Length: 150
Ligand SMILES: [Zn+2]
Image 1: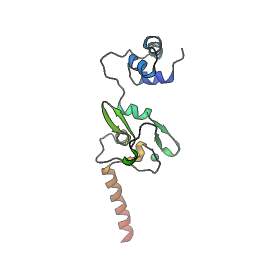
Image 2: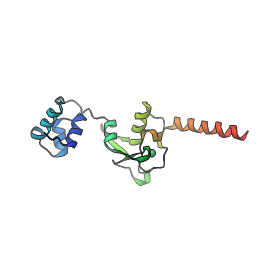
Image 3: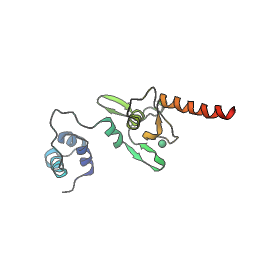
């Protein structure tokens, strides 16, 4: 059978048949369950929270482009707030920069996470840094330019 790509994606993300049916306006029994069986995925148990994490949602809302950039295709904050890319998960708002940082460094960022590249809307995990990394970069700069001026 042919499986719709959007259904397969949500199945792999761990959503229940009913949640997928609701989200995509399809029939849970006629469309989603056969797709799940064809993919060989276990039936989701009612009452369990979906396996989709903020990180899963992050990848679904990004688009890799040339130059190693990863463009955000999801929601952006108000222009007056810097148009910060964000998503909602588990009843909370997460900025895409913080998720990108966690993906790369495996720890919670310190202070604000800011992009290090000039590409608008880029949230590549390699292109964000937190306060600790900014301070380290500054120390490296100081060391280099300090050495040159002496
Ligand atoms: Zn970038």
